[in-house]
Length: 244
Image (cartoon, rainbow, N blue to C red):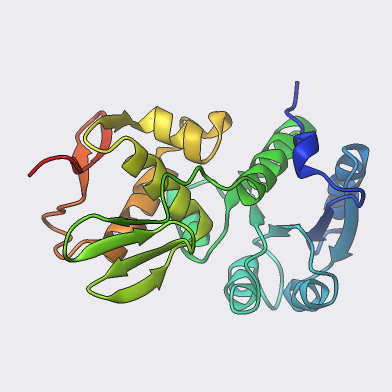
C-alpha cells in the first residue's frame, strides 16, 4: 500500500507536478498515474519548456527525463537550480551510480531508472513531497558546537568562523538528526530511513554524498574530520557535545 501525504500537509488545492519528457507516451503514462493519485499535472516536452513552466506555474514537484534532445535533463536541472528550489525527480534508462551521483550533485532530490512501475513512481513522489513539506524537529534555535562552529536551526544555516552558510533541506535534516544523536553511532539504514524515507534504506550512495556535502561546509580538514565521524561498516556519529 502506497503511503499518502498526511492530511495535515494537504490544502484544498491539489499539488502540482510538472512532467518533462520528450516522449509523449511517457508523459501520458506518468500523467495518468499521477492524476489517479489526485495530483494536478502540467507538461513540458523539453528542458527549455520546463524552465518556462516552472517560472509561470511554480509546481510542487518536477519529474524530468535525463535523455532529451538539445538540452538534456542534467543541463536543464542545472539551470533550474539557478531560479528554483522545487524538488526534482530525474528519470533515466541508465542505472549506474555515476549518473545518479551527477544528478544528485546538480540538485536532484531523487532518481528513478526506467522502466518503473506506477507503484514505485507513486512511492518516490510521496517520499520527496514528504521531505519537502515536513520540517525536521528543531532542538533549539542556535547551538554552539565550539568556538568555530554553530548551527542556526531556525534559518537552516551553519555558522563557520563567523560566516553563515545555507544548508539544503536534505543537508539540514541529516545534520539535525546526527546532532540529536550526538555521541552515538547512527547506522546507515537508520539515517536513510529517517532523512530520506524507509524506502531509501538501501540507497547508501545518497548518504555518502550528503555526508560529503556537510563535511565540505563544516569541517576544517576533510582528511581528518572533527565533527562528523565515520564508523566503518556501521554508520556515522556526530562528536559528543557533552565532552570537555
